[in-house]
Length: 507
Ligand code: KIV
Ligand code: ZN
Image 1 (cartoon, rainbow, N blue to C red):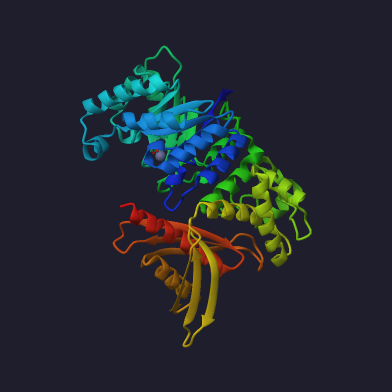
Image 2: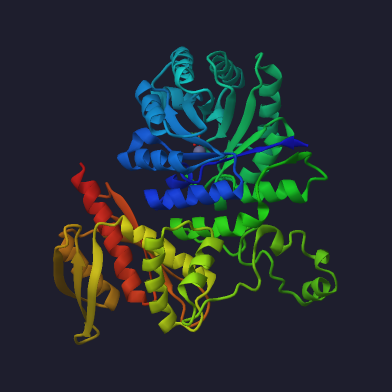
């Protein structure tokens, strides 16, 4: 059995999902859960891109004990230096340097000749190697790169000191036959006196990301990059839970195993879904809500006689609980704290105290507070902490002719309260018009999505909005969770408006 390293990029490529923005606290919670899940490497961010990314990588580096903590860098000295600084306190630091090698990227994006690209790889991988023991190199857009040039680029990186070669299918163009053949070609043709680990990195534009990663393993890859729930740029990345479970269930076919603790899978997926605001589709493999539901009579009959008739994965294998015990209004702080730990959150006493107060308010309104409710409470709390402006009060009034009036008060980070009133053809429109007055901006609401966190009429609501400036130059998103739909809508809009105002101000 060969060991397949799992390289998680939920916090880097996953954060490139349109509308996903993790703050440092959220990233640290996620990194701790990823480590518990058993990943070998955590790509914590791209430190040069923003002070927020730098801070998140630094904080993750401080708390991760067993996994490699990785920082991304372009082939530029300032990127490599910034990654080095951010990873200084990591127990096992690693750098991931990349440069595009396809003709279209070299010519139209980089405006570099193939010779200049090779020289840059040599210079920057060598430089990275002076600071890091482990250097991973990615020839971006590898699957659309001329094969012979790809080999030359990879050999240059290896000669300069890279011992991990990641082969990105950046635009999700490849298929399993081609991608597998590319790994066979590279592994058979490189020269090195050191062990070189080949890694897959697949995007899901044609829905083949997981199949491509498995084809890479069949052809010599010993590392798989991807994200939990398959989130990531455009259509997303390889869903790591799918790879881990596929290798386990089909060990008859793949003589390979990972260190993933499969029973931590559902918990990890739930945390990513809540903190990213990206709900998992019901029909998603392994972790979707319907993955263990049997609808047709024939199937139900079969499963009752022997679950294996229609179930190749048991819910228990991936930690899907069929009898999660809900908390109620009589539950005490100890039971609450224990439950939070079970759900994978590592919180201070102060945080537990604050969350317990929120839980009690919710328990007064709901008969049973489920695991999904609790995950939503923590997600909301972690998110609200990094939002400078908070909804203070919200009042609504029916005006006439179907018009609704809203009075909104928002507290800014200096503690100053701003109030405005407005009307609209509906409650939400009235609230959003009032918020626009406070921010003195008139963005376009490009999407508004509402979902219930649990089933039942007393479910908490999650609202996700995206906004765009009138000239379409800036976009922002926000998520609001509340028992009340209108409050959740206001929170989401305030979060997105604050972000939009900030990016306008930064210009
Ligand atoms: O998709 C891609 O090419 C990437 C690289 C930075 C590895 O994410
Ligand atoms: Zn990618």
